[in-house]
Amino acid sequence: MGAAGPVVTSAAPDSVAVSVYRDTDRGADAAMELSFLGGYALITETRVVDIPAGRSVLRFEGVAAGMLPESALVAGLPAGVREKNLDAALLSPHSLYGGAFGRPVTLRRIDPKTGATREEPAIIRSAPDGAAIVQTRAGFEIADCGPQKDQLVYDGLPQGLNARPTLSVAVDAPRAARARVSLSYLAWGFDWQAHYVLKLAPGARSAEMTAWVTLASSDSTSFPAAQTVVIGGRPNMETQRGAQVETPDLVMRCGIYPVRGGRPELVPVPPPPPVPVMAMPAPMMADIMVTATARKRVEPVTVRQEALGDLKLYRVPMPTTVAAHAQKQVALIAARPVKLQLLYKADVFGDTQLHPRVAVRLHNRKADGLGMALPAGKVSVWQPVRGATFPAGEGSMADKAQGEEIDVEVADGQKVTLQVRAAEPAPGRRDVRAELTNANPWPIRFEGRVPLFAGERIVTSSARLGRKNGLPLWVVTVPAHGRVQLRFAARAPS
Image (cartoon, rainbow, N blue to C red; front, side, top):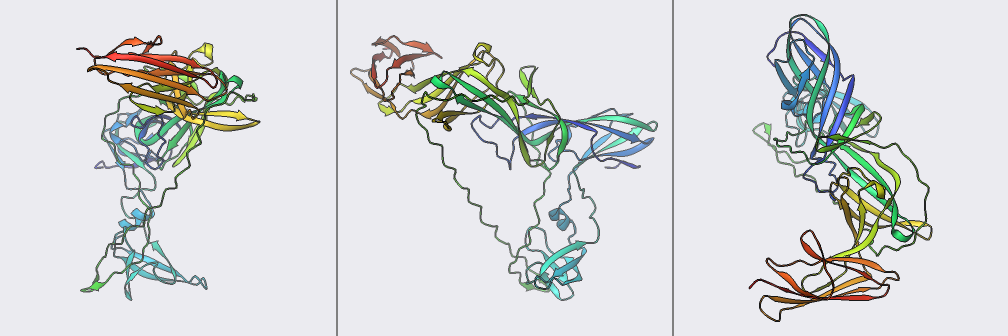
């Protein structure tokens, strides 16, 4: 920054608000990848600073490392902002080593057996991405590659490194003043998701619903006691995503570094093998039984819903810390009774045999215990059996407005079988026979969509078919240990 004059540093905000937006490219059923969060946050800070008269540089320390500097708005300065710059070179073992290339350091060596320490001067002669090569009076050596434990002690801080992410602005003030400055900006590396838990009641016609909001940050900056909100919906965000200001750890590696012509020849060190990912066993899916026991409700503090245009804002009612490289949960819905319906769903199409999907249907209205905008998220269904509670399945739902119907498919109905047989007795005609078998000791409700080819229409049917989302719908109740059949013919236009 070319501005001359004194430097004024604001070490931390006096207050901060964090509004977290979801990653719109992540599906409702996809887990957040904590090492690479694709959402973003609007950070609004308030700081009180003493501005000198004339030209000066104001440094805001402790901003988010993933800040988009082009989005920064500074209000409250005596004469506005003349220039702004995100100081991106953060202090870390990796950047400190890289910034000290060719500079003298102290090589501290510790004997692991005796604990004795000796020090000698050295000069760094390699980049930080391979082995740490230093030059001592004895020649070129690889640090931390012998029987002793080596440490590097630096004589000073290389120019341009900052201990914390910092935004610098150039200010021209007509007179000295104390200013209450507001700093707002967007930052990448945040995300949030909702998770709903349904505990079925006896008869499986109602459930106890609890919902949680999980906040996540992969940023290196923490925001303590922040006024926090999460934004539901899919706002449009078109920008070139800036890389977060992060530096990897310094890893000293041993290797073979031949010396030719008096200088070391750097041989690339192979990267470490990838850490295997342990596969988590999938939960066992089974038909949901209709027996359960009631549980006492607990009323946690929940977020408050507010309108934000076409979006929905969920406000955490108390200050909370949005910690660096961490996640936390706050309640979205306290345990409340909701009405629901269990049903089985499948497409009546092709020539196949399958198990329909078990679905939970809710209506987002006050009469059924809901009646609020529900953000997209995962849905877990639990069922009590003989005094214990077991997972019955898991699904997901998209954003749902008040009044909408919610269908969440959570499992395969192992005791319900749909067999479809199709024939083509004449060109342009399909004759379909479907048989639905229920091996459960209770009746079940089934809804089967009947997909049609372009221009097709049903000309005959053994049962009255409804219609949903533009397609014929077979709705039927199958008695316990019973079976039902459907026959229909579809014809394409001639």
